[in-house]
Image (cartoon, rainbow, N blue to C red; front, side, top):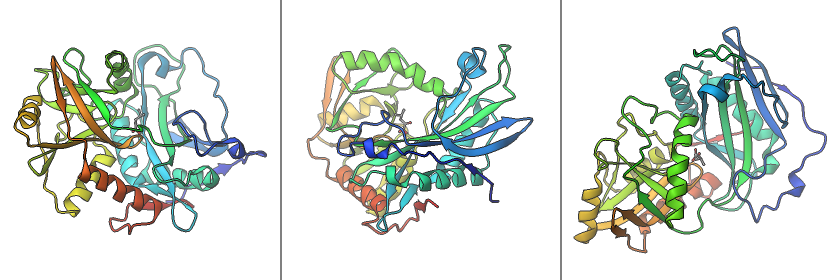
Length: 351
Ligand code: COI
C-alpha cells in the first residue's frame, strides 16, 4: 500500500556547511525529518518537514517509563549517484518486534520502508561518498502521551532523522569482559532495540573506558560465562577455521549486520555456528593457539576488529591479522557502494 506523505522542503539546505572529510557520527543532522503521530489507534499526519526541536510536555510518558525504541540503518551512494538503503525491510521487522515487546503500536512495514525511501531521496546530497562512510538513519518511536499513570501510552511519535557518519572506530578495539553488570536477561528486553537497554549499558561502558577499553563484552547474567554481545554490536570469533557467534536466545539483538556477516561468510565457504560460546572456550582457544580472529558487527560500527579482551586478571590477545573479517568488511562495503554485485538483493533504492 502506498501512503501519502506531505512534504515541506527547507528553503536553505545546510549541506554546504558539512566537512565530509571529517565526519563523526551523530554530530550533524540532515535538513529534514519524517514524523508521524499515533492517535486514536492509527498513524496520522505523515510528513517530511524541516528538522526542528519538538516541544515536550514534562509528563510525556517516554521520559518517565522509557517507552522508546529505535533502529539504526545506513544509506550509501550507489554507482548511479543515487542513494541506496541497506536491508530496510529487516529493520522494519525488528522495529515492530521491539514495539510489541514494550507494548507500543506497530508501524506497517510498507510505511516504514516508504517513509525511509522518500526521506533519503530528499537528503540524497547528504549521503557521504567515501568508502566506509554512510548516511546513518535513525528511525525511532516514543510514547508521547502526557500522563504519569503507569500503563501503555495511547499516543506515540514515529520519527526518522539522519546523520552523515564516517568510520566509528579507526583501529581494532579492546573489550572488557564485564563480571558485575549485565546487559540482558532471558525474558527481559535484550532482543528488542529498546532505549532502556542502552541506558543500562552506559555506566559499565564508561567504567570500562576508564580502564583503557573501548567497549564492554557482555556475559550471561547467571554465571558470567557465556558471551552475549560486545558493546553495541554482535560478536564473532574464529576458532580453528570456524566462525562462532552466540545464538539468538532471546537476550541477544538480532543484528542485521550479524545476519549479513553470517550470509557472507557462508557464501565465502566458511562454516558459521550460531551457538552458546563461553569465555572459557575463548581463553582455552587463545592458550592452545586456535583462536584466529574476533570481530564485532553492528550498523553504526560496521565490522570492528578486536585486538584484546580483558577478563578478570587475564588478557586474551588476538592475532594482528584479521584477514577474513577484513575481507567480509570490504565485500559488504563494496556491495553498499555498488562496486560489487548485490547478489543477495540487499540494497533498496531511495525514491
Ligand atoms: C547501531 O549500530 O545502529 C546502534 O544502534 C548503535 C548505536 C547505539 C550507536
